[in-house]
Length: 243
Length: 244
Image (tube, rainbow over all chains, first blue to last red; front, side, top):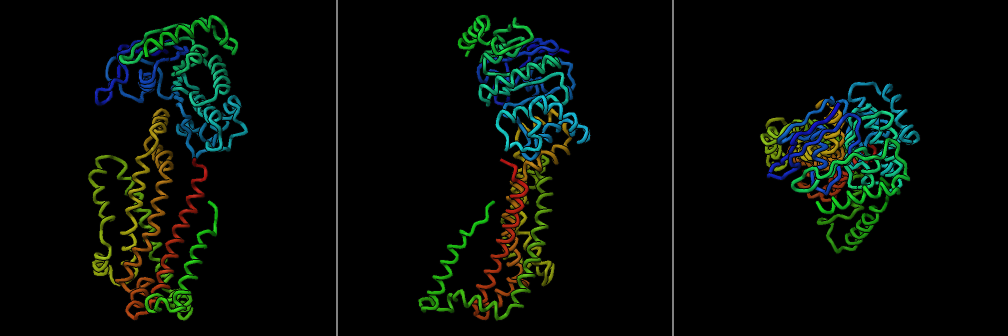
Protein backbone atom coordinates (compact mmCIF):
# COMPACT_ATOMS: atom_id res chain seq x y z
CA UNK A 1 0.00 0.00 0.00
CA UNK A 2 1.46 3.30 -1.01
CA UNK A 3 0.53 6.94 -1.45
CA UNK A 4 1.38 8.54 -4.76
CA UNK A 5 0.98 12.26 -5.33
CA UNK A 6 1.44 13.55 -8.86
CA UNK A 7 1.44 17.33 -9.24
CA UNK A 8 -1.15 17.44 -6.46
CA UNK A 9 -2.32 20.96 -5.75
CA UNK A 10 -4.87 22.86 -3.72
CA UNK A 11 -6.13 26.36 -4.43
CA UNK A 12 -8.65 27.85 -2.01
CA UNK A 13 -11.31 30.40 -2.94
CA UNK A 14 -9.79 33.81 -3.55
CA UNK A 15 -6.88 32.18 -5.43
CA UNK A 16 -5.05 31.47 -2.16
CA UNK A 17 -2.59 28.67 -2.84
CA UNK A 18 -2.85 25.91 -0.23
CA UNK A 19 -0.42 23.56 -1.96
CA UNK A 20 1.54 24.10 -5.17
CA UNK A 21 1.87 21.09 -7.51
CA UNK A 22 3.67 18.45 -5.46
CA UNK A 23 4.79 14.97 -6.47
CA UNK A 24 5.83 12.37 -3.89
CA UNK A 25 5.69 8.59 -3.57
CA UNK A 26 5.35 7.27 -0.03
CA UNK A 27 5.80 3.50 0.18
CA UNK A 28 4.04 1.23 2.64
CA UNK A 29 5.12 1.32 6.31
CA UNK A 30 7.36 4.32 5.90
CA UNK A 31 7.44 7.07 8.53
CA UNK A 32 7.67 10.33 6.59
CA UNK A 33 8.12 13.71 8.22
CA UNK A 34 7.00 16.91 6.50
CA UNK A 35 9.02 19.97 7.42
CA UNK A 36 8.62 23.50 6.18
CA UNK A 37 7.72 27.05 7.10
CA UNK A 38 4.18 27.96 8.18
CA UNK A 39 1.82 28.24 5.23
CA UNK A 40 3.83 26.02 2.88
CA UNK A 41 1.00 23.47 2.71
CA UNK A 42 2.03 20.71 5.13
CA UNK A 43 -1.36 20.46 6.84
CA UNK A 44 -3.16 20.91 3.51
CA UNK A 45 -1.20 17.97 2.14
CA UNK A 46 -2.19 15.89 5.17
CA UNK A 47 -5.86 16.84 4.77
CA UNK A 48 -5.77 16.01 1.06
CA UNK A 49 -4.40 12.55 1.85
CA UNK A 50 -7.07 12.15 4.57
CA UNK A 51 -9.83 13.16 2.18
CA UNK A 52 -10.75 16.14 4.37
CA UNK A 53 -10.00 18.54 1.48
CA UNK A 54 -10.82 18.29 -2.22
CA UNK A 55 -7.82 18.59 -4.55
CA UNK A 56 -7.78 21.38 -7.12
CA UNK A 57 -5.46 19.61 -9.53
CA UNK A 58 -3.07 16.72 -10.07
CA UNK A 59 -3.72 13.25 -8.80
CA UNK A 60 -3.63 11.42 -5.49
CA UNK A 61 -3.51 7.64 -5.57
CA UNK A 62 -3.69 5.69 -2.37
CA UNK A 63 -4.98 2.22 -1.52
CA UNK A 64 -6.05 2.89 2.06
CA UNK A 65 -9.74 2.55 2.86
CA UNK A 66 -11.29 5.27 5.01
CA UNK A 67 -11.50 2.99 8.07
CA UNK A 68 -7.78 2.22 7.74
CA UNK A 69 -6.76 5.86 8.25
CA UNK A 70 -6.38 7.69 11.56
CA UNK A 71 -5.72 11.38 12.02
CA UNK A 72 -4.14 12.91 15.12
CA UNK A 73 -4.78 16.64 15.45
CA UNK A 74 -2.50 19.23 16.97
CA UNK A 75 -4.66 19.92 20.02
CA UNK A 76 -5.87 16.37 20.77
CA UNK A 77 -9.47 17.12 19.64
CA UNK A 78 -11.14 15.23 22.48
CA UNK A 79 -14.87 15.42 23.16
CA UNK A 80 -15.11 17.27 26.50
CA UNK A 81 -18.33 15.53 27.55
CA UNK A 82 -16.82 12.04 27.24
CA UNK A 83 -14.44 10.28 29.64
CA UNK A 84 -10.99 9.10 28.61
CA UNK A 85 -12.34 5.59 27.94
CA UNK A 86 -15.35 6.89 25.97
CA UNK A 87 -13.09 9.12 23.86
CA UNK A 88 -10.75 6.23 23.09
CA UNK A 89 -13.50 3.83 22.03
CA UNK A 90 -15.37 6.44 19.97
CA UNK A 91 -14.10 5.25 16.55
CA UNK A 92 -15.25 1.71 17.40
CA UNK A 93 -18.65 2.63 18.83
CA UNK A 94 -19.32 4.82 15.79
CA UNK A 95 -18.70 1.71 13.69
CA UNK A 96 -21.37 -0.10 15.66
CA UNK A 97 -19.15 -2.09 18.01
CA UNK A 98 -20.60 -2.60 21.50
CA UNK A 99 -19.21 -0.51 24.35
CA UNK A 100 -18.24 -3.68 26.22
CA UNK A 101 -16.17 -5.16 23.42
CA UNK A 102 -14.63 -1.78 22.53
CA UNK A 103 -13.72 -1.21 26.19
CA UNK A 104 -11.85 -4.51 26.30
CA UNK A 105 -9.76 -3.38 23.30
CA UNK A 106 -9.25 0.01 24.91
CA UNK A 107 -7.62 -1.58 27.97
CA UNK A 108 -4.63 -2.62 25.83
CA UNK A 109 -4.13 0.89 24.42
CA UNK A 110 -4.70 2.59 27.74
CA UNK A 111 -2.00 0.36 29.20
CA UNK A 112 0.37 1.15 26.30
CA UNK A 113 -0.31 4.88 26.64
CA UNK A 114 -0.14 4.76 30.47
CA UNK A 115 -3.73 5.90 30.83
CA UNK A 116 -5.24 3.10 32.91
CA UNK A 117 -5.70 5.15 36.06
CA UNK A 118 -7.29 8.00 34.11
CA UNK A 119 -9.98 5.85 32.50
CA UNK A 120 -12.92 7.73 34.04
CA UNK A 121 -11.37 11.20 33.90
CA UNK A 122 -12.79 13.93 31.67
CA UNK A 123 -10.51 15.89 29.30
CA UNK A 124 -10.63 19.03 31.47
CA UNK A 125 -9.03 17.01 34.27
CA UNK A 126 -6.03 16.01 32.12
CA UNK A 127 -2.72 17.72 31.33
CA UNK A 128 -1.77 18.49 27.72
CA UNK A 129 0.48 15.42 27.58
CA UNK A 130 -2.25 13.09 28.85
CA UNK A 131 -4.76 14.53 26.40
CA UNK A 132 -2.39 13.80 23.55
CA UNK A 133 -1.91 10.24 24.83
CA UNK A 134 -5.71 9.80 24.73
CA UNK A 135 -5.76 11.20 21.20
CA UNK A 136 -3.02 8.78 20.10
CA UNK A 137 -4.76 5.83 21.80
CA UNK A 138 -7.98 6.77 19.99
CA UNK A 139 -6.11 6.88 16.71
CA UNK A 140 -4.47 3.49 17.29
CA UNK A 141 -7.44 1.50 18.61
CA UNK A 142 -8.69 0.87 15.08
CA UNK A 143 -5.27 -0.53 14.12
CA UNK A 144 -4.91 1.90 11.22
CA UNK A 145 -2.62 1.23 8.29
CA UNK A 146 -2.07 4.94 7.69
CA UNK A 147 -1.60 7.46 10.52
CA UNK A 148 -1.60 11.16 9.78
CA UNK A 149 0.00 13.21 12.56
CA UNK A 150 -0.57 16.96 12.40
CA UNK A 151 1.96 18.50 14.80
CA UNK A 152 0.81 16.22 17.60
CA UNK A 153 3.50 17.33 20.03
CA UNK A 154 3.44 21.05 19.29
CA UNK A 155 1.76 22.07 22.54
CA UNK A 156 3.76 19.75 24.80
CA UNK A 157 6.80 20.28 27.00
CA UNK A 158 10.10 18.87 25.73
CA UNK A 159 10.33 15.89 28.16
CA UNK A 160 6.78 14.81 27.28
CA UNK A 161 7.45 15.29 23.56
CA UNK A 162 10.48 13.00 23.83
CA UNK A 163 8.65 10.37 25.89
CA UNK A 164 5.62 10.30 23.58
CA UNK A 165 7.82 10.32 20.49
CA UNK A 166 9.76 7.31 21.70
CA UNK A 167 6.55 5.45 22.59
CA UNK A 168 5.09 6.19 19.19
CA UNK A 169 8.24 4.98 17.46
CA UNK A 170 8.08 1.73 19.46
CA UNK A 171 4.45 1.24 18.43
CA UNK A 172 5.38 1.92 14.82
CA UNK A 173 8.05 -0.81 15.03
CA UNK A 174 5.41 -3.30 16.17
CA UNK A 175 2.51 -2.36 13.91
CA UNK A 176 4.38 -0.88 10.94
CA UNK A 177 1.72 1.54 9.72
CA UNK A 178 2.56 4.22 7.18
CA UNK A 179 2.95 7.51 9.03
CA UNK A 180 2.90 11.03 7.61
CA UNK A 181 4.09 13.37 10.32
CA UNK A 182 3.85 17.16 10.12
CA UNK A 183 6.14 19.01 12.49
CA UNK A 184 8.00 22.28 12.90
CA UNK A 185 10.79 20.64 14.87
CA UNK A 186 13.75 19.59 12.72
CA UNK A 187 15.19 17.47 15.53
CA UNK A 188 11.89 15.66 16.07
CA UNK A 189 11.43 15.06 12.34
CA UNK A 190 14.90 13.54 11.92
CA UNK A 191 14.81 11.60 15.16
CA UNK A 192 11.46 9.86 14.64
CA UNK A 193 11.19 9.43 10.87
CA UNK A 194 12.68 7.26 8.13
CA UNK A 195 12.43 10.00 5.57
CA UNK A 196 12.17 13.77 5.62
CA UNK A 197 10.49 15.96 3.04
CA UNK A 198 11.19 19.68 3.27
CA UNK A 199 8.61 21.94 1.63
CA UNK A 200 9.35 25.54 0.73
CA UNK A 201 6.93 28.41 0.99
CA UNK A 202 5.17 30.05 -2.02
CA UNK A 203 5.32 28.30 -4.33
CA UNK A 204 5.26 25.30 -2.00
CA UNK A 205 7.29 22.47 -3.44
CA UNK A 206 9.54 19.70 -2.13
CA UNK A 207 13.08 21.05 -1.93
CA UNK A 208 14.58 18.16 0.00
CA UNK A 209 13.63 14.50 0.02
CA UNK A 210 15.98 12.60 2.27
CA UNK A 211 16.07 9.01 3.49
CA UNK A 212 17.56 8.90 6.96
CA UNK A 213 20.28 6.38 7.78
CA UNK A 214 19.48 5.87 11.46
CA UNK A 215 17.81 2.44 11.36
CA UNK A 216 14.64 1.33 13.10
CA UNK A 217 15.69 1.74 16.73
CA UNK A 218 15.82 5.28 17.96
CA UNK A 219 17.24 6.28 21.31
CA UNK A 220 17.63 9.61 22.99
CA UNK A 221 21.41 9.42 22.58
CA UNK A 222 21.00 9.51 18.79
CA UNK A 223 20.11 13.18 19.05
CA UNK A 224 23.59 14.05 20.33
CA UNK A 225 25.52 12.06 17.69
CA UNK A 226 27.53 14.07 15.19
CA UNK A 227 25.89 12.39 12.18
CA UNK A 228 22.49 13.37 13.45
CA UNK A 229 23.63 16.89 14.24
CA UNK A 230 25.02 17.22 10.70
CA UNK A 231 21.63 16.31 9.23
CA UNK A 232 19.87 18.77 11.55
CA UNK A 233 22.27 21.51 10.45
CA UNK A 234 21.66 20.73 6.77
CA UNK A 235 17.88 20.88 7.19
CA UNK A 236 18.15 24.04 9.23
CA UNK A 237 20.20 25.82 6.56
CA UNK A 238 17.80 24.68 3.87
CA UNK A 239 14.73 25.83 5.80
CA UNK A 240 16.37 29.16 6.56
CA UNK A 241 17.11 29.75 2.89
CA UNK A 242 13.60 28.78 1.79
CA UNK A 243 11.48 30.58 4.36
CA UNK B 1 -22.00 26.76 41.15
CA UNK B 2 -21.72 28.16 44.64
CA UNK B 3 -24.74 29.23 46.61
CA UNK B 4 -24.18 32.67 48.02
CA UNK B 5 -26.23 34.98 50.19
CA UNK B 6 -24.46 38.10 48.85
CA UNK B 7 -27.40 39.15 46.58
CA UNK B 8 -29.54 39.33 49.74
CA UNK B 9 -27.46 42.26 51.07
CA UNK B 10 -28.68 44.93 48.55
CA UNK B 11 -32.23 43.55 48.85
CA UNK B 12 -32.22 43.95 52.62
CA UNK B 13 -30.76 47.47 52.31
CA UNK B 14 -33.44 48.49 49.75
CA UNK B 15 -36.24 47.02 51.91
CA UNK B 16 -34.99 48.91 54.99
CA UNK B 17 -34.63 52.20 53.08
CA UNK B 18 -38.07 51.87 51.45
CA UNK B 19 -39.66 51.02 54.80
CA UNK B 20 -38.04 54.07 56.39
CA UNK B 21 -38.98 56.40 53.48
CA UNK B 22 -42.59 55.23 53.61
CA UNK B 23 -42.99 55.18 57.41
CA UNK B 24 -41.38 58.62 57.80
CA UNK B 25 -43.83 60.06 55.25
CA UNK B 26 -41.13 61.12 52.80
CA UNK B 27 -42.87 59.11 50.07
CA UNK B 28 -46.70 58.89 50.17
CA UNK B 29 -47.88 55.28 50.52
CA UNK B 30 -50.32 55.62 47.58
CA UNK B 31 -47.23 56.14 45.36
CA UNK B 32 -44.87 53.67 47.02
CA UNK B 33 -46.26 51.32 49.66
CA UNK B 34 -43.83 50.16 52.33
CA UNK B 35 -42.50 46.59 52.11
CA UNK B 36 -44.45 45.73 55.26
CA UNK B 37 -47.70 46.95 53.57
CA UNK B 38 -46.91 44.82 50.53
CA UNK B 39 -46.33 41.81 52.77
CA UNK B 40 -49.53 42.52 54.69
CA UNK B 41 -51.55 42.67 51.45
CA UNK B 42 -50.47 39.10 50.68
CA UNK B 43 -51.26 37.97 54.24
CA UNK B 44 -54.71 39.56 54.03
CA UNK B 45 -55.70 37.59 50.94
CA UNK B 46 -53.34 34.59 50.70
CA UNK B 47 -55.71 32.40 48.68
CA UNK B 48 -55.97 34.91 45.82
CA UNK B 49 -52.19 35.28 45.61
CA UNK B 50 -51.60 31.55 45.93
CA UNK B 51 -54.08 30.73 43.17
CA UNK B 52 -52.73 33.51 40.91
CA UNK B 53 -49.14 32.37 41.49
CA UNK B 54 -50.10 28.77 40.72
CA UNK B 55 -51.95 29.75 37.50
CA UNK B 56 -49.05 31.87 36.26
CA UNK B 57 -46.58 29.12 37.15
CA UNK B 58 -48.52 26.48 35.20
CA UNK B 59 -49.07 28.76 32.20
CA UNK B 60 -45.50 30.05 31.96
CA UNK B 61 -44.00 26.61 32.60
CA UNK B 62 -46.15 25.11 29.85
CA UNK B 63 -45.25 28.00 27.51
CA UNK B 64 -41.57 27.52 28.34
CA UNK B 65 -41.68 23.77 27.75
CA UNK B 66 -43.39 24.26 24.37
CA UNK B 67 -40.76 26.91 23.51
CA UNK B 68 -37.96 24.51 24.41
CA UNK B 69 -39.34 21.68 22.28
CA UNK B 70 -40.53 23.77 19.32
CA UNK B 71 -37.45 26.03 19.48
CA UNK B 72 -35.01 23.14 19.52
CA UNK B 73 -36.76 21.27 16.70
CA UNK B 74 -36.89 24.51 14.65
CA UNK B 75 -33.18 25.08 15.31
CA UNK B 76 -32.34 21.55 14.18
CA UNK B 77 -34.26 22.12 10.95
CA UNK B 78 -32.74 25.58 10.41
CA UNK B 79 -29.20 24.37 11.04
CA UNK B 80 -29.66 21.44 8.67
CA UNK B 81 -29.06 23.47 5.51
CA UNK B 82 -28.15 27.01 4.57
CA UNK B 83 -30.98 26.99 2.02
CA UNK B 84 -33.62 26.22 4.66
CA UNK B 85 -32.06 28.73 7.04
CA UNK B 86 -32.11 31.56 4.52
CA UNK B 87 -35.72 30.74 3.64
CA UNK B 88 -37.17 30.50 7.15
CA UNK B 89 -34.89 32.34 9.63
CA UNK B 90 -36.48 35.77 8.89
CA UNK B 91 -39.82 34.29 9.98
CA UNK B 92 -38.27 33.09 13.23
CA UNK B 93 -37.35 36.74 13.83
CA UNK B 94 -41.09 37.44 13.87
CA UNK B 95 -41.25 35.97 17.36
CA UNK B 96 -38.54 38.37 18.52
CA UNK B 97 -40.08 41.50 17.07
CA UNK B 98 -43.78 40.86 17.57
CA UNK B 99 -45.32 43.36 20.07
CA UNK B 100 -46.98 40.80 22.30
CA UNK B 101 -49.16 43.40 24.03
CA UNK B 102 -50.64 44.24 20.62
CA UNK B 103 -51.39 40.68 19.56
CA UNK B 104 -52.62 39.44 22.94
CA UNK B 105 -56.20 40.65 22.13
CA UNK B 106 -56.04 38.64 18.90
CA UNK B 107 -55.01 35.59 20.91
CA UNK B 108 -58.04 36.08 23.14
CA UNK B 109 -60.32 36.19 20.09
CA UNK B 110 -58.73 33.03 18.73
CA UNK B 111 -58.24 31.05 21.93
CA UNK B 112 -60.69 32.59 24.40
CA UNK B 113 -60.28 33.98 27.93
CA UNK B 114 -58.27 31.30 29.62
CA UNK B 115 -55.11 29.28 29.93
CA UNK B 116 -54.55 28.65 26.17
CA UNK B 117 -54.19 32.40 25.49
CA UNK B 118 -51.73 32.82 28.35
CA UNK B 119 -49.69 29.79 27.26
CA UNK B 120 -49.64 31.03 23.64
CA UNK B 121 -48.48 34.47 24.77
CA UNK B 122 -45.76 32.92 26.95
CA UNK B 123 -44.63 30.71 24.06
CA UNK B 124 -44.50 33.54 21.47
CA UNK B 125 -42.33 35.70 23.70
CA UNK B 126 -39.95 32.96 24.82
CA UNK B 127 -39.35 30.82 21.74
CA UNK B 128 -36.96 33.07 19.83
CA UNK B 129 -33.99 32.95 22.23
CA UNK B 130 -34.22 29.15 22.15
CA UNK B 131 -34.15 29.13 18.33
CA UNK B 132 -31.42 31.79 18.01
CA UNK B 133 -29.09 30.31 20.65
CA UNK B 134 -29.60 26.73 19.48
CA UNK B 135 -28.94 27.60 15.82
CA UNK B 136 -25.80 29.46 16.90
CA UNK B 137 -24.62 26.48 18.93
CA UNK B 138 -25.46 23.90 16.28
CA UNK B 139 -23.62 25.88 13.60
CA UNK B 140 -20.64 26.57 15.83
CA UNK B 141 -19.38 23.00 16.09
CA UNK B 142 -15.60 22.88 16.26
CA UNK B 143 -14.30 22.34 12.71
CA UNK B 144 -11.57 19.99 13.94
CA UNK B 145 -14.10 17.75 15.70
CA UNK B 146 -16.21 17.71 12.54
CA UNK B 147 -13.11 16.60 10.62
CA UNK B 148 -12.51 13.94 13.26
CA UNK B 149 -16.04 12.56 12.83
CA UNK B 150 -15.60 12.72 9.05
CA UNK B 151 -12.37 10.72 9.41
CA UNK B 152 -14.22 8.19 11.56
CA UNK B 153 -16.84 7.87 8.83
CA UNK B 154 -19.70 8.90 11.13
CA UNK B 155 -23.23 8.92 9.75
CA UNK B 156 -25.18 12.23 9.66
CA UNK B 157 -27.30 11.14 12.65
CA UNK B 158 -24.14 10.23 14.63
CA UNK B 159 -22.69 13.67 13.82
CA UNK B 160 -25.92 15.29 14.99
CA UNK B 161 -26.54 13.35 18.19
CA UNK B 162 -22.98 12.56 19.25
CA UNK B 163 -21.28 15.79 18.22
CA UNK B 164 -23.40 18.77 17.16
CA UNK B 165 -26.05 18.56 19.89
CA UNK B 166 -23.70 17.90 22.82
CA UNK B 167 -21.33 20.58 21.50
CA UNK B 168 -24.20 23.10 21.29
CA UNK B 169 -25.51 22.27 24.78
CA UNK B 170 -24.03 25.38 26.51
CA UNK B 171 -25.70 27.67 23.95
CA UNK B 172 -28.95 25.70 24.04
CA UNK B 173 -29.10 25.95 27.84
CA UNK B 174 -28.24 29.66 27.56
CA UNK B 175 -31.30 30.05 25.32
CA UNK B 176 -33.45 28.16 27.85
CA UNK B 177 -32.18 30.46 30.58
CA UNK B 178 -33.22 33.62 28.70
CA UNK B 179 -36.50 31.99 27.68
CA UNK B 180 -37.30 31.18 31.35
CA UNK B 181 -37.56 34.88 32.28
CA UNK B 182 -39.37 35.78 29.06
CA UNK B 183 -41.94 33.00 29.51
CA UNK B 184 -43.10 34.63 32.74
CA UNK B 185 -43.28 38.06 31.05
CA UNK B 186 -45.31 36.57 28.19
CA UNK B 187 -47.67 34.84 30.59
CA UNK B 188 -48.22 38.04 32.60
CA UNK B 189 -49.02 39.99 29.40
CA UNK B 190 -51.47 37.26 28.33
CA UNK B 191 -53.06 37.38 31.78
CA UNK B 192 -53.49 41.17 31.58
CA UNK B 193 -55.87 40.54 28.72
CA UNK B 194 -57.45 37.28 29.81
CA UNK B 195 -57.78 38.41 33.43
CA UNK B 196 -56.29 35.40 35.19
CA UNK B 197 -53.15 34.69 37.24
CA UNK B 198 -50.73 37.30 38.59
CA UNK B 199 -51.22 39.47 35.48
CA UNK B 200 -54.96 39.59 36.08
CA UNK B 201 -54.33 40.32 39.75
CA UNK B 202 -52.02 43.25 38.83
CA UNK B 203 -54.63 44.62 36.41
CA UNK B 204 -57.47 44.38 38.95
CA UNK B 205 -55.38 45.90 41.78
CA UNK B 206 -54.31 48.77 39.48
CA UNK B 207 -57.95 49.58 38.76
CA UNK B 208 -58.62 49.64 42.52
CA UNK B 209 -55.55 51.87 43.16
CA UNK B 210 -54.19 49.06 45.40
CA UNK B 211 -50.50 49.61 44.75
CA UNK B 212 -49.56 47.30 47.63
CA UNK B 213 -51.27 44.39 45.83
CA UNK B 214 -49.68 45.43 42.52
CA UNK B 215 -46.22 45.35 44.10
CA UNK B 216 -46.93 42.02 45.77
CA UNK B 217 -47.98 40.45 42.46
CA UNK B 218 -44.99 41.95 40.63
CA UNK B 219 -42.67 40.60 43.32
CA UNK B 220 -44.18 37.11 42.99
CA UNK B 221 -43.87 37.25 39.18
CA UNK B 222 -40.19 38.20 39.50
CA UNK B 223 -39.71 35.40 41.99
CA UNK B 224 -41.14 32.97 39.43
CA UNK B 225 -38.75 34.23 36.74
CA UNK B 226 -35.83 33.81 39.15
CA UNK B 227 -36.98 30.27 39.99
CA UNK B 228 -37.02 29.31 36.28
CA UNK B 229 -33.63 30.94 35.74
CA UNK B 230 -32.17 29.15 38.76
CA UNK B 231 -33.57 25.81 37.64
CA UNK B 232 -31.90 26.11 34.21
CA UNK B 233 -28.69 27.33 35.90
CA UNK B 234 -28.78 24.20 38.04
CA UNK B 235 -29.27 22.06 34.91
CA UNK B 236 -26.39 23.95 33.35
CA UNK B 237 -24.20 23.14 36.30
CA UNK B 238 -25.08 19.44 36.26
CA UNK B 239 -24.80 18.93 32.50
CA UNK B 240 -21.75 21.10 31.81
CA UNK B 241 -19.58 20.47 34.85
CA UNK B 242 -17.01 18.61 32.77
CA UNK B 243 -16.67 21.29 30.11
CA UNK B 244 -13.71 23.62 30.20
